[in-house]
Length: 637
Image 1 (tube, rainbow, N blue to C red):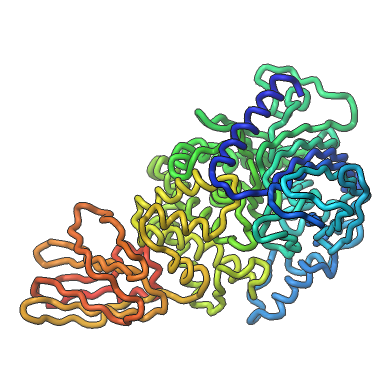
Image 2 (image 1 turned 180 degrees about the vertical axis):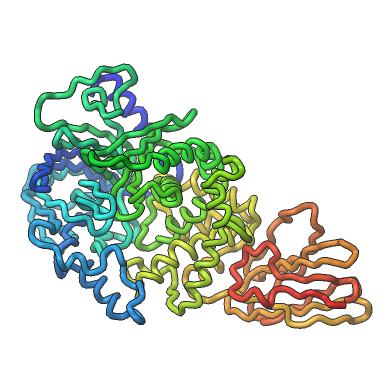
Protein backbone atom coordinates (compact mmCIF):
# COMPACT_ATOMS: atom_id res chain seq x y z
CA UNK A 1 0.00 0.00 0.00
CA UNK A 2 1.40 3.40 -0.91
CA UNK A 3 1.93 6.06 1.77
CA UNK A 4 -0.96 8.25 0.63
CA UNK A 5 -3.46 5.40 0.74
CA UNK A 6 -2.10 4.25 4.09
CA UNK A 7 -2.62 7.68 5.65
CA UNK A 8 -6.12 7.91 4.17
CA UNK A 9 -7.07 4.54 5.60
CA UNK A 10 -5.69 5.38 9.04
CA UNK A 11 -7.57 8.67 8.99
CA UNK A 12 -10.86 6.90 8.31
CA UNK A 13 -10.19 4.37 11.09
CA UNK A 14 -9.35 7.12 13.62
CA UNK A 15 -12.39 9.21 12.66
CA UNK A 16 -14.88 6.34 12.83
CA UNK A 17 -13.26 5.00 15.98
CA UNK A 18 -13.52 8.35 17.75
CA UNK A 19 -17.19 8.62 16.78
CA UNK A 20 -17.85 5.16 18.17
CA UNK A 21 -16.12 5.87 21.48
CA UNK A 22 -18.08 9.09 21.90
CA UNK A 23 -21.47 7.39 21.79
CA UNK A 24 -21.67 5.58 25.12
CA UNK A 25 -19.35 4.28 27.82
CA UNK A 26 -20.44 0.65 27.31
CA UNK A 27 -17.38 -1.52 26.62
CA UNK A 28 -17.16 -3.78 23.62
CA UNK A 29 -14.51 -6.12 22.26
CA UNK A 30 -12.37 -5.27 19.25
CA UNK A 31 -10.85 -7.32 16.44
CA UNK A 32 -8.37 -6.75 13.66
CA UNK A 33 -8.20 -9.41 10.94
CA UNK A 34 -5.37 -9.86 8.46
CA UNK A 35 -6.10 -12.68 6.01
CA UNK A 36 -4.36 -14.17 2.99
CA UNK A 37 -6.60 -16.39 0.85
CA UNK A 38 -5.54 -18.61 -2.02
CA UNK A 39 -8.50 -19.84 -4.09
CA UNK A 40 -8.45 -22.79 -6.48
CA UNK A 41 -11.42 -22.34 -8.83
CA UNK A 42 -11.01 -25.88 -10.19
CA UNK A 43 -11.43 -27.66 -6.87
CA UNK A 44 -13.57 -24.93 -5.25
CA UNK A 45 -11.25 -24.96 -2.26
CA UNK A 46 -9.05 -22.34 -0.68
CA UNK A 47 -6.37 -22.17 1.95
CA UNK A 48 -6.19 -19.30 4.38
CA UNK A 49 -3.86 -17.69 6.86
CA UNK A 50 -5.47 -15.48 9.47
CA UNK A 51 -3.87 -13.18 11.99
CA UNK A 52 -6.39 -11.90 14.51
CA UNK A 53 -5.57 -9.20 17.03
CA UNK A 54 -8.19 -9.53 19.76
CA UNK A 55 -8.66 -6.81 22.36
CA UNK A 56 -10.46 -7.72 25.56
CA UNK A 57 -11.97 -4.42 26.63
CA UNK A 58 -14.08 -6.06 29.33
CA UNK A 59 -13.22 -6.38 33.01
CA UNK A 60 -13.52 -10.17 32.65
CA UNK A 61 -10.78 -12.78 32.41
CA UNK A 62 -11.42 -14.95 29.35
CA UNK A 63 -10.37 -18.58 29.74
CA UNK A 64 -11.69 -19.71 26.38
CA UNK A 65 -12.74 -18.20 23.06
CA UNK A 66 -15.14 -19.32 20.33
CA UNK A 67 -15.11 -19.03 16.54
CA UNK A 68 -17.88 -19.47 13.99
CA UNK A 69 -17.21 -22.03 11.24
CA UNK A 70 -20.41 -21.38 9.32
CA UNK A 71 -19.88 -23.57 6.27
CA UNK A 72 -19.71 -26.77 8.30
CA UNK A 73 -23.51 -26.43 8.34
CA UNK A 74 -23.63 -27.54 4.71
CA UNK A 75 -23.13 -31.22 5.41
CA UNK A 76 -25.77 -33.97 5.60
CA UNK A 77 -27.23 -34.42 9.09
CA UNK A 78 -25.98 -31.02 10.26
CA UNK A 79 -28.09 -29.02 12.69
CA UNK A 80 -29.27 -26.81 9.83
CA UNK A 81 -30.23 -29.84 7.74
CA UNK A 82 -32.13 -31.62 10.51
CA UNK A 83 -33.82 -28.51 11.90
CA UNK A 84 -35.24 -27.57 8.53
CA UNK A 85 -36.53 -31.08 7.83
CA UNK A 86 -38.16 -31.14 11.28
CA UNK A 87 -39.96 -27.92 10.41
CA UNK A 88 -41.35 -29.68 7.36
CA UNK A 89 -42.72 -32.56 9.45
CA UNK A 90 -44.55 -30.20 11.79
CA UNK A 91 -46.31 -28.09 9.19
CA UNK A 92 -49.96 -28.34 8.35
CA UNK A 93 -50.49 -29.72 4.84
CA UNK A 94 -46.79 -29.12 4.21
CA UNK A 95 -47.11 -25.37 3.93
CA UNK A 96 -43.88 -23.37 3.73
CA UNK A 97 -43.04 -23.47 7.42
CA UNK A 98 -39.57 -24.64 6.55
CA UNK A 99 -37.04 -22.48 4.78
CA UNK A 100 -37.75 -23.22 1.11
CA UNK A 101 -34.27 -22.07 0.13
CA UNK A 102 -32.78 -24.89 2.20
CA UNK A 103 -35.57 -27.47 1.87
CA UNK A 104 -33.86 -30.89 2.00
CA UNK A 105 -30.98 -29.93 -0.30
CA UNK A 106 -28.23 -30.30 2.33
CA UNK A 107 -28.97 -33.99 2.83
CA UNK A 108 -28.32 -34.59 -0.88
CA UNK A 109 -24.87 -32.97 -1.06
CA UNK A 110 -22.00 -35.20 -2.15
CA UNK A 111 -18.44 -35.08 -0.79
CA UNK A 112 -17.29 -32.60 -3.40
CA UNK A 113 -20.43 -30.44 -2.91
CA UNK A 114 -20.44 -30.07 0.88
CA UNK A 115 -18.89 -27.16 2.71
CA UNK A 116 -16.22 -27.51 5.33
CA UNK A 117 -13.80 -25.40 7.30
CA UNK A 118 -10.86 -27.31 8.75
CA UNK A 119 -8.45 -25.73 11.21
CA UNK A 120 -4.88 -26.78 10.44
CA UNK A 121 -3.22 -24.88 13.27
CA UNK A 122 -4.06 -22.27 15.90
CA UNK A 123 -1.79 -20.35 18.25
CA UNK A 124 -2.14 -17.44 20.66
CA UNK A 125 0.86 -15.15 21.10
CA UNK A 126 2.96 -17.86 19.45
CA UNK A 127 1.76 -20.63 21.78
CA UNK A 128 -0.11 -23.54 20.16
CA UNK A 129 -3.72 -23.95 21.32
CA UNK A 130 -5.92 -27.03 21.41
CA UNK A 131 -9.48 -26.76 20.16
CA UNK A 132 -12.74 -28.67 19.96
CA UNK A 133 -15.00 -28.71 16.89
CA UNK A 134 -18.73 -28.42 17.57
CA UNK A 135 -19.85 -28.47 13.94
CA UNK A 136 -20.23 -24.73 13.21
CA UNK A 137 -18.59 -23.61 16.47
CA UNK A 138 -14.90 -23.91 17.35
CA UNK A 139 -14.24 -23.94 21.09
CA UNK A 140 -10.72 -22.96 22.16
CA UNK A 141 -9.81 -23.63 25.83
CA UNK A 142 -6.85 -21.30 26.29
CA UNK A 143 -3.65 -22.49 27.90
CA UNK A 144 -3.26 -18.97 29.27
CA UNK A 145 -6.23 -16.66 29.96
CA UNK A 146 -6.80 -13.31 28.27
CA UNK A 147 -6.67 -10.72 31.04
CA UNK A 148 -8.99 -7.70 31.24
CA UNK A 149 -7.98 -4.67 29.15
CA UNK A 150 -5.36 -6.67 27.25
CA UNK A 151 -4.67 -7.68 23.65
CA UNK A 152 -3.58 -11.03 22.22
CA UNK A 153 -2.77 -12.25 18.73
CA UNK A 154 -4.21 -15.47 17.28
CA UNK A 155 -2.59 -17.04 14.23
CA UNK A 156 -4.58 -19.61 12.31
CA UNK A 157 -4.19 -21.69 9.19
CA UNK A 158 -7.32 -23.21 7.71
CA UNK A 159 -8.67 -25.07 4.69
CA UNK A 160 -12.12 -24.58 3.24
CA UNK A 161 -14.29 -26.17 0.60
CA UNK A 162 -16.92 -23.86 -0.83
CA UNK A 163 -20.30 -25.65 -0.73
CA UNK A 164 -22.88 -25.62 -3.44
CA UNK A 165 -24.94 -22.52 -2.76
CA UNK A 166 -27.74 -23.53 -0.40
CA UNK A 167 -28.25 -20.60 1.97
CA UNK A 168 -26.64 -17.19 1.46
CA UNK A 169 -23.04 -18.20 0.73
CA UNK A 170 -21.65 -20.85 -1.59
CA UNK A 171 -20.79 -21.60 -5.21
CA UNK A 172 -22.70 -21.90 -8.45
CA UNK A 173 -25.90 -20.26 -7.26
CA UNK A 174 -28.77 -22.09 -9.00
CA UNK A 175 -30.86 -18.93 -9.49
CA UNK A 176 -28.22 -16.80 -11.21
CA UNK A 177 -25.14 -18.95 -11.83
CA UNK A 178 -22.75 -16.74 -9.85
CA UNK A 179 -19.64 -18.78 -9.14
CA UNK A 180 -18.78 -17.62 -5.63
CA UNK A 181 -20.99 -15.88 -3.06
CA UNK A 182 -18.50 -15.61 -0.23
CA UNK A 183 -20.47 -14.78 2.88
CA UNK A 184 -19.84 -16.38 6.29
CA UNK A 185 -16.73 -17.78 4.63
CA UNK A 186 -13.91 -17.36 7.18
CA UNK A 187 -13.36 -18.47 10.82
CA UNK A 188 -14.97 -15.58 12.66
CA UNK A 189 -14.53 -14.77 16.34
CA UNK A 190 -17.80 -14.98 18.25
CA UNK A 191 -19.11 -11.95 20.08
CA UNK A 192 -18.45 -11.55 23.79
CA UNK A 193 -20.47 -8.85 25.53
CA UNK A 194 -22.22 -8.02 28.80
CA UNK A 195 -24.23 -11.23 28.43
CA UNK A 196 -21.13 -13.36 27.89
CA UNK A 197 -20.16 -15.40 24.84
CA UNK A 198 -22.54 -15.87 21.90
CA UNK A 199 -21.41 -19.13 20.26
CA UNK A 200 -24.65 -19.48 18.30
CA UNK A 201 -24.64 -22.52 15.98
CA UNK A 202 -25.50 -21.79 12.36
CA UNK A 203 -29.05 -23.05 12.02
CA UNK A 204 -30.07 -20.73 9.21
CA UNK A 205 -31.12 -17.48 10.81
CA UNK A 206 -29.23 -14.33 11.76
CA UNK A 207 -25.80 -13.18 12.94
CA UNK A 208 -23.74 -11.22 15.44
CA UNK A 209 -20.23 -9.90 14.94
CA UNK A 210 -17.43 -7.97 16.66
CA UNK A 211 -16.49 -4.51 15.41
CA UNK A 212 -13.04 -4.30 13.89
CA UNK A 213 -10.78 -3.73 10.91
CA UNK A 214 -10.12 -6.13 8.03
CA UNK A 215 -7.17 -6.44 5.67
CA UNK A 216 -7.87 -9.22 3.18
CA UNK A 217 -5.80 -10.43 0.24
CA UNK A 218 -7.51 -12.85 -2.14
CA UNK A 219 -5.53 -14.67 -4.82
CA UNK A 220 -7.81 -16.06 -7.52
CA UNK A 221 -7.83 -16.87 -11.24
CA UNK A 222 -7.25 -13.59 -13.08
CA UNK A 223 -10.39 -14.00 -15.20
CA UNK A 224 -12.56 -13.45 -12.10
CA UNK A 225 -13.93 -10.06 -11.07
CA UNK A 226 -14.57 -9.43 -7.36
CA UNK A 227 -16.82 -7.11 -5.40
CA UNK A 228 -18.07 -6.70 -1.85
CA UNK A 229 -16.87 -5.24 1.44
CA UNK A 230 -13.77 -3.07 1.61
CA UNK A 231 -11.73 -0.63 -0.43
CA UNK A 232 -9.58 -2.14 -3.17
CA UNK A 233 -6.00 -0.99 -2.52
CA UNK A 234 -4.40 -2.09 -5.78
CA UNK A 235 -7.18 -1.00 -8.13
CA UNK A 236 -4.82 0.33 -10.81
CA UNK A 237 -3.13 -3.07 -11.06
CA UNK A 238 -6.43 -5.00 -10.98
CA UNK A 239 -8.61 -2.86 -13.26
CA UNK A 240 -12.06 -4.29 -14.01
CA UNK A 241 -13.55 -0.81 -13.65
CA UNK A 242 -11.98 -0.08 -10.24
CA UNK A 243 -8.99 1.76 -11.68
CA UNK A 244 -8.56 5.52 -11.47
CA UNK A 245 -10.00 7.25 -14.53
CA UNK A 246 -7.41 7.53 -17.30
CA UNK A 247 -5.15 4.84 -15.87
CA UNK A 248 -3.76 2.22 -18.22
CA UNK A 249 -4.09 -1.09 -16.39
CA UNK A 250 -1.16 -3.47 -16.77
CA UNK A 251 -2.09 -6.72 -15.07
CA UNK A 252 0.34 -9.35 -13.90
CA UNK A 253 1.09 -12.15 -16.39
CA UNK A 254 0.63 -14.74 -13.66
CA UNK A 255 -2.37 -17.09 -13.65
CA UNK A 256 -3.81 -15.41 -10.59
CA UNK A 257 -4.41 -11.86 -9.42
CA UNK A 258 -4.23 -10.88 -5.77
CA UNK A 259 -7.01 -8.51 -4.75
CA UNK A 260 -6.06 -6.43 -1.70
CA UNK A 261 -8.92 -4.98 0.39
CA UNK A 262 -9.08 -2.82 3.52
CA UNK A 263 -12.30 -2.38 5.48
CA UNK A 264 -12.24 -0.07 8.55
CA UNK A 265 -14.63 -0.48 11.47
CA UNK A 266 -16.95 -3.18 10.16
CA UNK A 267 -18.29 -6.35 11.78
CA UNK A 268 -18.04 -8.72 8.81
CA UNK A 269 -16.46 -9.09 5.38
CA UNK A 270 -18.24 -10.43 2.27
CA UNK A 271 -17.03 -10.86 -1.30
CA UNK A 272 -18.27 -12.46 -4.48
CA UNK A 273 -16.42 -13.51 -7.63
CA UNK A 274 -17.38 -14.48 -11.16
CA UNK A 275 -15.64 -14.43 -14.56
CA UNK A 276 -18.73 -12.91 -16.21
CA UNK A 277 -19.41 -10.04 -13.83
CA UNK A 278 -20.21 -6.69 -15.39
CA UNK A 279 -19.34 -3.60 -13.35
CA UNK A 280 -21.39 -0.39 -13.23
CA UNK A 281 -20.74 2.50 -10.88
CA UNK A 282 -21.81 6.03 -10.08
CA UNK A 283 -20.79 8.76 -7.67
CA UNK A 284 -23.22 10.15 -5.11
CA UNK A 285 -22.65 13.92 -4.75
CA UNK A 286 -20.94 14.46 -1.38
CA UNK A 287 -21.34 10.75 -0.79
CA UNK A 288 -19.98 7.31 -1.61
CA UNK A 289 -19.27 5.52 -4.87
CA UNK A 290 -22.00 3.02 -5.72
CA UNK A 291 -20.87 -0.19 -7.42
CA UNK A 292 -23.18 -2.67 -9.13
CA UNK A 293 -21.79 -6.06 -10.21
CA UNK A 294 -23.98 -8.55 -12.02
CA UNK A 295 -23.40 -11.64 -14.09
CA UNK A 296 -23.46 -11.41 -17.87
CA UNK A 297 -22.93 -14.89 -19.37
CA UNK A 298 -20.73 -15.02 -22.45
CA UNK A 299 -23.41 -16.74 -24.51
CA UNK A 300 -26.21 -14.23 -23.89
CA UNK A 301 -26.89 -10.60 -23.15
CA UNK A 302 -28.75 -9.87 -19.94
CA UNK A 303 -31.08 -6.91 -19.59
CA UNK A 304 -29.13 -4.04 -18.05
CA UNK A 305 -32.18 -1.95 -17.22
CA UNK A 306 -32.90 -3.34 -13.75
CA UNK A 307 -29.27 -3.02 -12.64
CA UNK A 308 -29.00 0.49 -14.05
CA UNK A 309 -32.16 1.43 -12.19
CA UNK A 310 -30.49 0.38 -8.93
CA UNK A 311 -27.84 3.03 -9.65
CA UNK A 312 -30.54 5.59 -10.44
CA UNK A 313 -32.46 4.68 -7.29
CA UNK A 314 -29.34 5.02 -5.13
CA UNK A 315 -28.46 8.40 -6.54
CA UNK A 316 -31.97 9.81 -6.18
CA UNK A 317 -32.78 8.58 -2.66
CA UNK A 318 -29.40 8.97 -0.96
CA UNK A 319 -30.01 12.58 0.22
CA UNK A 320 -33.44 11.62 1.60
CA UNK A 321 -32.12 8.54 3.40
CA UNK A 322 -29.22 10.40 5.03
CA UNK A 323 -31.54 13.18 6.14
CA UNK A 324 -33.92 10.69 7.73
CA UNK A 325 -31.49 8.20 9.26
CA UNK A 326 -27.99 9.74 9.39
CA UNK A 327 -24.80 10.12 7.36
CA UNK A 328 -23.38 7.02 5.71
CA UNK A 329 -19.79 6.86 7.03
CA UNK A 330 -18.03 4.78 4.37
CA UNK A 331 -16.70 5.74 0.94
CA UNK A 332 -18.50 3.07 -1.09
CA UNK A 333 -21.44 0.71 -1.26
CA UNK A 334 -21.78 -2.30 -3.58
CA UNK A 335 -24.77 -4.24 -4.88
CA UNK A 336 -23.37 -7.61 -5.95
CA UNK A 337 -25.33 -10.35 -7.68
CA UNK A 338 -25.11 -13.62 -5.80
CA UNK A 339 -26.65 -15.61 -2.98
CA UNK A 340 -30.23 -16.78 -2.80
CA UNK A 341 -32.30 -13.62 -2.35
CA UNK A 342 -30.96 -10.60 -0.55
CA UNK A 343 -28.53 -10.41 2.34
CA UNK A 344 -26.88 -7.41 3.96
CA UNK A 345 -23.20 -7.03 4.78
CA UNK A 346 -21.01 -4.05 5.68
CA UNK A 347 -20.56 -1.78 2.64
CA UNK A 348 -22.33 -4.29 0.39
CA UNK A 349 -25.24 -6.61 -0.26
CA UNK A 350 -25.68 -9.89 -2.10
CA UNK A 351 -28.84 -9.81 -4.20
CA UNK A 352 -30.20 -12.62 -6.34
CA UNK A 353 -31.44 -10.38 -9.14
CA UNK A 354 -31.87 -6.72 -10.05
CA UNK A 355 -35.16 -6.49 -8.16
CA UNK A 356 -35.50 -2.94 -6.86
CA UNK A 357 -37.47 -3.94 -3.78
CA UNK A 358 -34.74 -6.34 -2.65
CA UNK A 359 -31.98 -3.85 -3.43
CA UNK A 360 -33.69 -1.08 -1.47
CA UNK A 361 -34.25 -3.33 1.55
CA UNK A 362 -30.62 -4.44 1.66
CA UNK A 363 -29.42 -0.86 1.26
CA UNK A 364 -31.47 0.23 4.27
CA UNK A 365 -29.74 -2.47 6.31
CA UNK A 366 -26.64 -0.28 6.04
CA UNK A 367 -28.29 1.92 8.67
CA UNK A 368 -30.32 -0.61 10.65
CA UNK A 369 -27.77 -3.40 10.86
CA UNK A 370 -24.56 -2.38 9.13
CA UNK A 371 -24.05 0.62 11.43
CA UNK A 372 -25.70 -0.89 14.50
CA UNK A 373 -24.60 -4.54 14.45
CA UNK A 374 -27.28 -5.52 16.94
CA UNK A 375 -27.52 -9.18 17.83
CA UNK A 376 -29.82 -10.31 15.01
CA UNK A 377 -30.49 -13.65 16.71
CA UNK A 378 -32.09 -11.87 19.65
CA UNK A 379 -33.40 -8.70 18.00
CA UNK A 380 -34.07 -9.59 14.38
CA UNK A 381 -37.06 -7.22 14.42
CA UNK A 382 -34.69 -4.37 15.24
CA UNK A 383 -32.91 -4.67 11.90
CA UNK A 384 -35.27 -6.55 9.57
CA UNK A 385 -38.35 -4.68 10.71
CA UNK A 386 -36.70 -1.27 10.71
CA UNK A 387 -35.17 -1.94 7.29
CA UNK A 388 -38.54 -3.00 5.90
CA UNK A 389 -40.07 0.20 7.26
CA UNK A 390 -37.30 2.42 5.86
CA UNK A 391 -37.36 0.58 2.54
CA UNK A 392 -41.01 1.53 2.06
CA UNK A 393 -40.29 5.23 2.47
CA UNK A 394 -37.12 5.10 0.35
CA UNK A 395 -39.10 3.51 -2.49
CA UNK A 396 -41.88 6.05 -1.99
CA UNK A 397 -39.35 8.86 -2.25
CA UNK A 398 -37.92 7.36 -5.43
CA UNK A 399 -41.18 6.76 -7.28
CA UNK A 400 -42.33 10.30 -6.50
CA UNK A 401 -39.28 11.53 -8.41
CA UNK A 402 -40.18 9.46 -11.48
CA UNK A 403 -42.42 10.94 -14.20
CA UNK A 404 -46.11 10.08 -14.32
CA UNK A 405 -46.69 6.93 -16.32
CA UNK A 406 -43.23 5.51 -15.68
CA UNK A 407 -43.47 1.72 -15.48
CA UNK A 408 -41.78 1.52 -12.07
CA UNK A 409 -43.92 4.31 -10.69
CA UNK A 410 -47.12 2.56 -11.77
CA UNK A 411 -45.93 -0.74 -10.27
CA UNK A 412 -45.16 0.65 -6.83
CA UNK A 413 -48.13 3.01 -6.70
CA UNK A 414 -50.34 -0.06 -7.06
CA UNK A 415 -48.43 -1.79 -4.26
CA UNK A 416 -48.78 1.21 -1.94
CA UNK A 417 -52.43 1.91 -2.68
CA UNK A 418 -54.40 2.66 0.49
CA UNK A 419 -53.41 3.70 4.00
CA UNK A 420 -51.22 3.73 5.98
CA UNK A 421 -49.08 4.79 3.04
CA UNK A 422 -46.56 3.49 2.15
CA UNK A 423 -46.18 0.80 4.88
CA UNK A 424 -49.58 -0.75 4.21
CA UNK A 425 -48.16 -4.03 2.94
CA UNK A 426 -46.42 -4.66 6.26
CA UNK A 427 -49.68 -4.14 8.16
CA UNK A 428 -51.58 -6.51 5.87
CA UNK A 429 -48.93 -9.20 6.22
CA UNK A 430 -48.88 -8.77 10.00
CA UNK A 431 -52.66 -9.24 10.05
CA UNK A 432 -52.21 -12.42 8.01
CA UNK A 433 -49.71 -13.67 10.59
CA UNK A 434 -52.21 -13.05 13.38
CA UNK A 435 -54.96 -14.90 11.50
CA UNK A 436 -52.66 -17.86 10.83
CA UNK A 437 -52.46 -18.71 14.53
CA UNK A 438 -48.69 -19.22 14.17
CA UNK A 439 -47.52 -15.92 15.64
CA UNK A 440 -44.83 -16.11 18.33
CA UNK A 441 -43.32 -13.34 20.48
CA UNK A 442 -40.60 -11.35 18.69
CA UNK A 443 -38.42 -11.80 21.78
CA UNK A 444 -38.01 -15.46 20.76
CA UNK A 445 -34.45 -16.30 19.69
CA UNK A 446 -34.40 -16.44 15.88
CA UNK A 447 -33.33 -20.10 15.87
CA UNK A 448 -36.05 -21.19 18.28
CA UNK A 449 -39.23 -20.17 16.50
CA UNK A 450 -41.56 -23.09 15.91
CA UNK A 451 -41.98 -22.22 12.25
CA UNK A 452 -40.03 -20.48 9.53
CA UNK A 453 -43.14 -18.44 8.67
CA UNK A 454 -43.51 -17.06 12.21
CA UNK A 455 -39.86 -16.05 12.33
CA UNK A 456 -39.85 -14.26 8.97
CA UNK A 457 -43.28 -12.62 9.17
CA UNK A 458 -42.68 -11.48 12.73
CA UNK A 459 -39.25 -9.95 12.18
CA UNK A 460 -40.01 -8.29 8.85
CA UNK A 461 -43.67 -7.28 9.01
CA UNK A 462 -44.54 -6.99 12.68
CA UNK A 463 -41.14 -5.33 13.16
CA UNK A 464 -41.95 -2.74 10.48
CA UNK A 465 -45.35 -2.06 12.03
CA UNK A 466 -43.60 -1.52 15.37
CA UNK A 467 -41.74 1.54 14.12
CA UNK A 468 -44.63 3.02 12.09
CA UNK A 469 -47.06 2.44 14.96
CA UNK A 470 -44.56 4.19 17.24
CA UNK A 471 -45.33 7.35 15.25
CA UNK A 472 -49.00 6.88 16.14
CA UNK A 473 -48.03 6.70 19.83
CA UNK A 474 -45.46 9.52 20.08
CA UNK A 475 -46.16 11.51 16.91
CA UNK A 476 -44.43 11.27 13.54
CA UNK A 477 -42.06 14.18 14.15
CA UNK A 478 -40.94 12.69 17.45
CA UNK A 479 -40.55 9.23 15.92
CA UNK A 480 -38.31 10.67 13.21
CA UNK A 481 -36.18 12.42 15.85
CA UNK A 482 -35.91 9.10 17.69
CA UNK A 483 -34.51 7.41 14.57
CA UNK A 484 -31.90 10.12 14.04
CA UNK A 485 -30.89 10.05 17.69
CA UNK A 486 -30.70 6.25 17.50
CA UNK A 487 -28.12 6.70 14.75
CA UNK A 488 -26.21 9.38 16.66
CA UNK A 489 -26.00 7.48 19.93
CA UNK A 490 -25.78 3.85 18.91
CA UNK A 491 -23.93 3.49 15.60
CA UNK A 492 -20.96 1.13 16.02
CA UNK A 493 -22.23 0.11 19.49
CA UNK A 494 -24.39 -3.09 19.30
CA UNK A 495 -27.71 -1.65 20.60
CA UNK A 496 -30.39 -3.92 22.04
CA UNK A 497 -34.16 -3.57 22.02
CA UNK A 498 -33.99 -2.13 25.53
CA UNK A 499 -31.51 0.50 24.33
CA UNK A 500 -33.89 1.63 21.61
CA UNK A 501 -36.84 1.88 23.99
CA UNK A 502 -34.82 3.82 26.57
CA UNK A 503 -33.75 6.29 23.90
CA UNK A 504 -37.33 6.62 22.60
CA UNK A 505 -38.57 7.37 26.10
CA UNK A 506 -36.09 10.21 26.52
CA UNK A 507 -36.93 11.73 23.14
CA UNK A 508 -40.71 11.46 23.60
CA UNK A 509 -40.78 12.28 27.33
CA UNK A 510 -43.14 9.40 27.97
CA UNK A 511 -42.94 5.79 29.17
CA UNK A 512 -42.77 3.20 26.40
CA UNK A 513 -41.63 0.01 28.12
CA UNK A 514 -45.23 -1.22 28.00
CA UNK A 515 -45.11 -1.01 24.19
CA UNK A 516 -42.13 -3.33 24.07
CA UNK A 517 -43.71 -5.69 26.58
CA UNK A 518 -46.92 -6.05 24.60
CA UNK A 519 -45.73 -5.76 20.99
CA UNK A 520 -42.36 -7.53 21.21
CA UNK A 521 -42.63 -9.86 24.19
CA UNK A 522 -46.19 -11.09 23.64
CA UNK A 523 -48.63 -11.93 20.87
CA UNK A 524 -51.50 -9.91 22.32
CA UNK A 525 -53.39 -7.97 19.68
CA UNK A 526 -55.08 -4.57 19.38
CA UNK A 527 -58.82 -4.31 18.80
CA UNK A 528 -60.88 -1.27 19.74
CA UNK A 529 -64.50 -0.74 18.81
CA UNK A 530 -67.32 1.81 19.09
CA UNK A 531 -69.69 0.18 21.56
CA UNK A 532 -72.61 2.61 21.79
CA UNK A 533 -73.75 6.20 21.31
CA UNK A 534 -76.32 8.25 23.19
CA UNK A 535 -77.24 11.76 24.33
CA UNK A 536 -77.66 13.16 27.84
CA UNK A 537 -78.54 16.77 28.68
CA UNK A 538 -77.68 18.00 25.20
CA UNK A 539 -74.27 16.30 25.26
CA UNK A 540 -73.29 13.26 23.22
CA UNK A 541 -71.72 10.19 24.82
CA UNK A 542 -69.56 7.74 22.88
CA UNK A 543 -68.61 4.52 24.63
CA UNK A 544 -65.50 2.76 23.31
CA UNK A 545 -64.58 -0.82 24.11
CA UNK A 546 -61.17 -2.46 24.26
CA UNK A 547 -61.75 -5.91 22.82
CA UNK A 548 -58.13 -6.91 22.22
CA UNK A 549 -55.71 -7.59 25.07
CA UNK A 550 -53.17 -4.89 24.14
CA UNK A 551 -53.93 -1.37 25.43
CA UNK A 552 -53.15 1.66 23.29
CA UNK A 553 -53.72 5.41 23.19
CA UNK A 554 -56.69 6.16 20.98
CA UNK A 555 -57.41 8.88 18.43
CA UNK A 556 -61.13 9.29 17.73
CA UNK A 557 -61.98 11.34 14.66
CA UNK A 558 -65.38 13.07 14.65
CA UNK A 559 -67.02 14.76 11.65
CA UNK A 560 -70.04 17.03 12.05
CA UNK A 561 -72.79 17.86 9.58
CA UNK A 562 -71.66 21.48 9.48
CA UNK A 563 -68.28 20.39 8.07
CA UNK A 564 -66.29 20.73 11.29
CA UNK A 565 -63.90 17.97 12.33
CA UNK A 566 -62.03 17.22 15.52
CA UNK A 567 -59.86 14.59 17.20
CA UNK A 568 -60.67 13.33 20.66
CA UNK A 569 -57.31 12.05 21.91
CA UNK A 570 -57.20 9.54 24.75
CA UNK A 571 -53.72 8.81 26.14
CA UNK A 572 -53.10 5.39 27.69
CA UNK A 573 -52.34 5.45 31.43
CA UNK A 574 -49.01 3.59 31.21
CA UNK A 575 -47.58 6.32 28.93
CA UNK A 576 -47.53 9.07 31.60
CA UNK A 577 -47.68 11.64 28.82
CA UNK A 578 -49.30 12.40 25.50
CA UNK A 579 -48.18 12.93 21.93
CA UNK A 580 -48.21 16.44 20.47
CA UNK A 581 -50.82 17.40 17.91
CA UNK A 582 -49.73 16.22 14.47
CA UNK A 583 -52.09 18.31 12.33
CA UNK A 584 -52.58 21.87 13.49
CA UNK A 585 -55.48 22.31 11.05
CA UNK A 586 -57.65 19.86 13.00
CA UNK A 587 -59.01 20.73 16.43
CA UNK A 588 -57.87 18.29 19.11
CA UNK A 589 -59.13 17.70 22.64
CA UNK A 590 -56.87 15.80 25.07
CA UNK A 591 -58.96 13.64 27.40
CA UNK A 592 -58.19 11.84 30.64
CA UNK A 593 -55.91 8.81 30.19
CA UNK A 594 -57.62 5.44 29.65
CA UNK A 595 -56.61 3.07 32.47
CA UNK A 596 -55.36 -0.16 30.88
CA UNK A 597 -57.32 -2.22 33.42
CA UNK A 598 -60.65 -0.77 32.24
CA UNK A 599 -62.35 -2.40 29.23
CA UNK A 600 -64.53 0.62 28.36
CA UNK A 601 -64.17 4.40 28.13
CA UNK A 602 -66.83 7.07 27.63
CA UNK A 603 -66.16 10.23 25.64
CA UNK A 604 -68.40 13.23 26.29
CA UNK A 605 -68.91 15.68 23.41
CA UNK A 606 -70.55 19.07 24.14
CA UNK A 607 -72.72 18.86 21.02
CA UNK A 608 -76.00 17.17 20.23
CA UNK A 609 -76.11 13.74 18.73
CA UNK A 610 -77.99 15.08 15.72
CA UNK A 611 -74.95 17.25 14.86
CA UNK A 612 -72.76 14.23 14.21
CA UNK A 613 -72.07 12.63 10.83
CA UNK A 614 -69.15 10.21 11.21
CA UNK A 615 -67.06 8.73 14.04
CA UNK A 616 -63.87 6.73 13.52
CA UNK A 617 -61.26 5.22 15.83
CA UNK A 618 -57.75 5.84 14.46
CA UNK A 619 -58.55 7.65 11.20
CA UNK A 620 -54.81 7.58 10.28
CA UNK A 621 -54.92 3.75 10.31
CA UNK A 622 -51.49 3.52 11.90
CA UNK A 623 -52.75 1.55 14.89
CA UNK A 624 -52.58 -2.15 14.01
CA UNK A 625 -56.19 -2.85 14.92
CA UNK A 626 -56.92 -6.41 13.85
CA UNK A 627 -60.63 -5.70 13.28
CA UNK A 628 -61.31 -2.32 11.74
CA UNK A 629 -64.98 -2.99 10.93
CA UNK A 630 -65.99 -1.88 14.44
CA UNK A 631 -63.89 1.30 14.25
CA UNK A 632 -66.32 3.35 12.15
CA UNK A 633 -69.84 4.59 12.71
CA UNK A 634 -71.87 6.53 10.16
CA UNK A 635 -74.70 8.50 11.77
CA UNK A 636 -77.80 7.85 9.60
CA UNK A 637 -80.05 10.67 10.81
